[in-house]
Amino acid sequence: MLLEYIAIAVMIAVATLIAGIAIGLGELFGPKKASAAKSMPYESGMNPYGEGTRRMPVRFYLIAVLFILFDIEVVFLLPWAITFRKLGLFGLIEMAIFIVILLIGYVYAWGKGALEWE
Amino acid sequence: MTQPTINDFHTILPMIVLSVWACLLLLVDLFIPKDRKGITALLAALGLILSLGFNLTRIGMESVGFSGMVVLDGFATFANVLLLLSGLFGVALAYGYVRRMGIERGEYYTLLLFSVCGMMLMAQAADLIIVFLALELLSIPLYVLAAFARGDMQSQEAGVKYFLLGAFATGFVVYGTALVFGATGTTSLGGIFAAASAGASTGSGNGLMFTIGAALILVGFGFKVAAVPFHMWTPDVYQGAPSAATAFMSSGAKVAGFVALLRVFSTSFPALASDMNGILWTLSALTMIVGNLIAIAQTNIKRMLAYSSIAHAGYILMAFVSYGNPQVASVSIASGMFYLMAYTLTNFGAWSVVVALEKAEGKGLEIADYAGVARKHPALAAAMAVFMLSFIGFPPTLGMVGKFYLFRAAIAGGYTGLALIGVLTSLVSAYYYLRVVVNMYMREGELVPEREPWLGFATALTAAATVALSLVPQWVFLLASTAVMK
Image 1 (cartoon, rainbow over the protein chains, first blue to last red):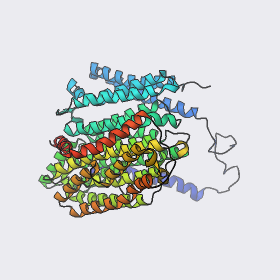
Image 2: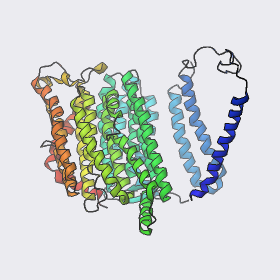
Image 3: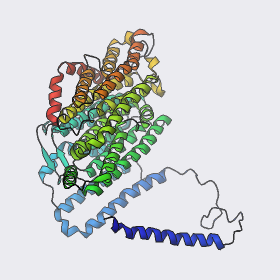
Image 4: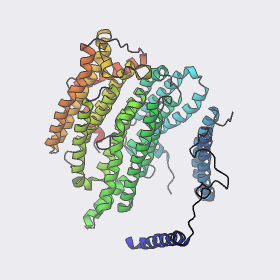
C-alpha cells in the first residue's frame, strides 16, 4: 500500500528540486546591489506609508464573516444543483433546511445591524 | 444512499428540539428589548425543560439512527439528563449575574443552548465524524462565553486562550481520527472495533498507526476534560471567564468530554486496553496529584476551583483505567457516571456561591474575602460548607459516595495503588477546601452576598441534592448502572 505513495514522494522531490534550482541559480549568478528602494516592501508600485499592522475598522471583519457565510452556502449549493435529480425530493428538503439555518443567521445579523455601515 | 426515516429523527429528538429552539430563540431575542433580557433566559430554560421532557420519555429506549451515525441508549439518556441539568443550572446562575456585571445580552443564552446541543450530540455520537462535529458545536459557543465580558481584559484573554488551545486539542482528535481511519478503514465506533478484532484474529494486527491514533484522540479529550499534563489552560480560562460561564463550562464540557471518552474507548478500543492502561493510570495519578497540590497555593477562589476541577478529572479518570477488563468495566463506568453526576451537582453549587459573593470589577473573589459570611448569612455558608465537604469526599455528601464507588471500582480492577493515591490526595485536598469553610465561620468580615431568587434556588437545590442523594446512593447508582448495561 505504501508503494502507491511513491508517486507523491517523487512529485514532492521534483517540485523541491525545480524550486531549489530556480532560487539557487538566481542567488548564485544574480547581481546583489542593495539599495533603499529595493529593500522597501512591495505595495503595487506605490511608496508604502505607515505600519503594516495598522488598525482597521472592525466592520470589515463583520463583512468578511458574512461573506464566508454565503460563500459556503454557494459551495454547498453547487454540488447539490449538479446531483439534483439523483437526490430528488429528499435533497430538496435537506437543502431547504440548510438554507433556512443560514437564513436564521442572516436575519440575526440583519436585525443586529451588522449590514449597516454608518 | 439511504434516506432517513422518522425513526432516525426519534433517535436524537431531544437534541433536535433543543437546536430548533435555540435557532428560534436567536430570532425572538431580536425583538426583546435590551432591559428585559430576562425573558430570553426564561425562554432558554423553557427550551431546556422541553428537551429534558423529551429526553425522559426516551428512558429504556435503544435505537441507532442515520446509518449508524448516532445512537440512543441508556448511557446517552443518562448523560443527556446531566447535560440538560447543567444547562438549566447554567441559565439559573447567569440570570442575575450577567445583569449585575453589565454583560447582559440575549446571545449568552442562545450560545449556552447551542453548546448543550453539541454536548448532547457528543453523548449520542456513534461515529468519530459525529464526535468531531459535536466537539466543535459544544466548544465554539464556550469560547465565546469565556470572552463574554468583552470589556474585561481577563475575559478576553480567557476566550482567546481557550480558543487557541481548544482548536489545538480538536486538531489532535481529528489527526487521531484520521490515523484510526487509515488503520481500520472506517470511522464508525462499532466498525473500528470489528476491524481491530478482525486484524487481531488474522494476526496481521493494526499496528502502530492504530495505537497512535487512539492515543491522539485521548490527548484531544485530555485537553477538554483538563487532565494533567493537558491542563495548562484551565486556571487562566476559569478565572478570566465570567463566573456563571465558568460554572457551565467546568461542568457541562467535562461531562461531555468524559462521556465521549468513555464511549469511544469502551466501544472502539478495547483491543488497545493493555497499551492504554499504563497511560490512563499515569494520567489519572498525575492529574490527582498535580491538581490537588497546586490548589493548595491558590488564594483566588476561582483559581482554586479550577485546580479542584482538574483534580476531580483525575478521580473520574480512575474509572477508565480498567475499561478493557470485561469483568469490572461496566461497574467502573457506572462509577464514573455516578461521580460525574456528583461532581456536576457539587460544582454548580460551589460556583453558585462564588457567583453570589462576586462583586463588580472582580471584587470578592479572594478566599480571604469570604471571612465572616457565616455570621450574617448562615444558610449560604452552610451550603458552601456542604459543597466543600462533598469535594473532599466527606459524609454525608454525594462526593463521599462517589469517591467510594470510584475507589471500589479501582480496587476491583486491581489498581489498589491508584485508589491509594486517590485517598491520599483527597486528604491533601481537605486542607484547601476546609480553608474556605474556616474563613467563612471563624473570621470576621463584611462581604454581603447578592440576593437573587434563581441563584438562591440553584444553591439550595444543589445543596439539598448533594446531601439527600447521598442518603439513598444505591438508587442513583442503580440508575447509572442500568444506564451503562448494554
